[in-house]
Amino acid sequence: MSDSQKSKGSSGRSYRGGAGITKTPKKSRGRTESSRRWIQRQLNDPFVAEAKARGFRSRAALKLEQIDQKHKILTHNASVLDLGCAPGGWLQYASQKIGLTAGHGRLVGIDLLDTDPVAGADILKGDINDDAMMREIIRLLGGKADVVMSDMAADTTGHRSTDHLRTTALLDIALDMASRVLTPGGVFLAKCFRGGAEKDALDVMRRDFAVVRHIKPAASRAESVESYVLATGFRGEAPQDLSGDDHKL
Ligand SMILES: C[S@@+](CC[C@H](N)C(=O)[O-])C[C@H]1O[C@@H](n2cnc3c(N)ncnc32)[C@H](O)[C@@H]1O
Image (cartoon, rainbow, N blue to C red):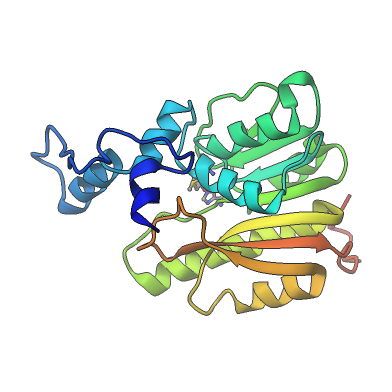
């Protein structure tokens, strides 16, 4: 990331805290070293300031905005599924782009955690691995989705390969969901910690989508292993599961 991006945020506006003044947490007694570092980083992060100033619930909203501005994934009236939606920054951004408050499009989200309401969106609290949740998502979508996006991440353990495997398992389940609900030509966007285990999921994406790209938006911290994978041009449904317990539309 360039210095100007660091101090100006993604919209080009500048912020206090990005002008060479390093903010430090007021009360740090009793905190662990890693939590002190996290708070300090939040206080001095221009994207946190920008997200807050623009009323987004999370800086993650700016990552989606940067991806969308470049790749045009969210269009007016689209039907969108957001996996791992709390606290709701992606929902807020997607809602604006599809015109949800004016009654256009459809927006369904799910997270293990509570998510504050977003006008017009259907938000579930639960685990995407739960079959009942999968069925409920399909019911709420009421048809095929144009975009399935997943920012799901497992709680980090600090053990790099464990964290990689846990996040890759979420990528796998998100891709499975996408293959069930996406419309032909649809888009799949997902968080992807690169490290090797994601290879199978990438192979499936290359088979089932016209184009697969790796993306690292400016708002994704340079030091983080986080990146995103964007697959566009869904080719159509995967072969039907004839076992009888099949959630396809
Ligand atoms: C980085 S946050 C998402 C931030 C969100 N995109 C936003 O803009 O506010 C990742 C979320 O994934 C959720 N998550 C992790 N595993 C999940 C699962 N199995 N089912 C549903 N949500 C899950 C976590 O609870 C967490 O809230």
